[in-house]
Length: 521
Image (cartoon, rainbow, N blue to C red; front, side, top):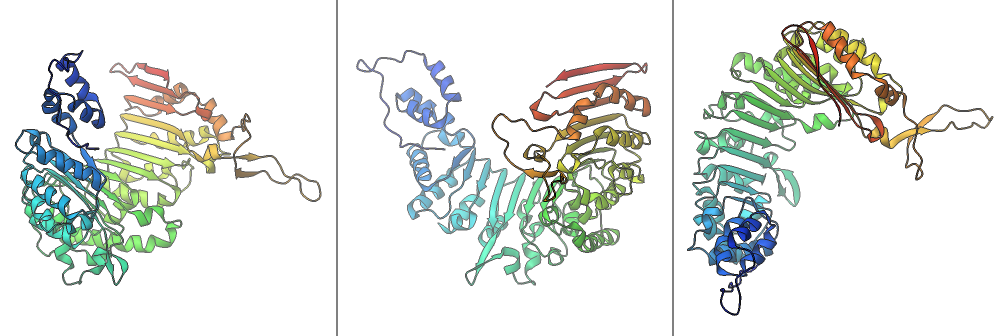
């Protein structure tokens, strides 16, 4: 939000004739205009000045500099006796340490913000250090329902403990502190004996009666130290939990949040490690700790959906059925983890994105996973396949034949297949054969290069096979091979930005197959 200094508006008189458009039209224009234009229109007459506040303050008010915050404070305090605070509903603060006067003004505004519902703090430690009353002003906003606090350290923890608003959703990102001038992860700077009291389930007890959704991002946490309090407060309404944790330990969350229905876990270290094989022993240890703990203590009884990394769910070792599972990206190195994850979850609906044509008739393939007991209850399967540079010399048809054989053992009622081309196919192309010193042609090599202007590189074999694939024929084969299927959806992305083909086949109650949609996108 770019706030401009409020100027006294002109009153309409003989020297300033009425505007050519009536006020209803001008107000409608303000409703769709950017904030600088709204501020300019407000300065033209008193009617627009008084009516424009709701458009100038429409959610969210995003402040990224001290100058903008100064203008914002001037505007709000100048109109403090008017009704503009009722329009002040959402605020994003991207500022750090504030000027002393600006901080005091903001404290006054926050204490009057009786309609503020959403607040985002990005640089929380420096921001809270600006004025000792800022934390108390935020904690006391009774209308607040949604709060994001980033770079959480000690001062933000005290704010969270003191919250008096009935929060519905909360997002936390833990940050770093300086220890002898060196940045250190906040949790690693805490005395181990005090660490359980800094676990989110202990920090947030003041909002336990109302909290419905929680998102927590850790950095480099030592999972074995993050068990949390021995007897955590129960959050009866918390149904959505999102964790970004490299080594998640689930006991405190399961005990404090017994009614979780939707779970997301991301694990950065695992996702971006070049060689996951070297970490499998650590993964297995973390998984076994969670699984054994759930056998002894508690497990979720109401979990309905998981969305996130396959590694996150593997590490969590969730010991209950999960009807709906969405895995955001499965690569070749994840296949050893995918089978056990699905055996635990036994999903009814599976949505998975796969990088590469991982459909060989081998022990390590998607086809083998689909034949496991964990997939025996699948009635809905959505499969997105990213064809990448490693597949350049392969034929899509061979992989799809293997996939069809795996689908035939499933009780599927709905199947969706999307074939996409990865960006690396456009960046890496075949270079002409090179001559050896003896004058013979060497093997063709693939290099990343920018082709000359106007030159169109030849297609790879896998791209040719995508062009040749007939979605109607393949869809009919799927319907013939899987008797329970009622609907098949196929979407094929073509190389060189050519139009996509989209096809849906529906089998009605009379077992007749109807082409519901066949179009180019």
